[in-house]
Image (cartoon, rainbow, N blue to C red):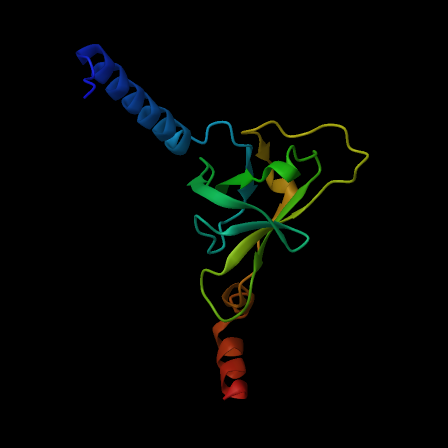
Amino acid sequence: MRSVSAAGRVAAIAAVVLAVVLVAVLLFRGTTDDYQVKAEFLNASQLVKGNLVQVGGTKAGSVKEIDMTEDGRALVTLQIDDQYEPLRKGTQAIIRQASLSGIANRYVDLQLAPGTSKETYDSGEVIRADDTTTSVDLDQLFDVFDKDTRDALQAFFR
């Protein structure tokens, strides 16, 4: 019978530990190298972390974080898939509703800038509010009417 020396056992254990550490690093490494841009909206319009980012109806990323700026606007961090990076300057970001049947069923629709635009957004750069559009909720629409008009509309729909 063949015996394994102590040095051989230590080397085998060290190789297994090294392999486990390497796999863990590859699986759990941070997403710091991912391409992300931020978009400044007047409000988050019921957008939540994890909502889709789409280009022409195709998944192009996801909402990673929603913060607030000092002046009360929503600052939404968008993680963009590799095939759409880098976004060209002039890209429009619009918060849209997927349907009327839910509350937090929003997504960010990116309308890419024309191919003639040479400047691009660096990772972490902000798409300013001039290039974003926030969806309008029905409640906001009815808020423009005074109380008497709202009551009359409510009676009409009943």
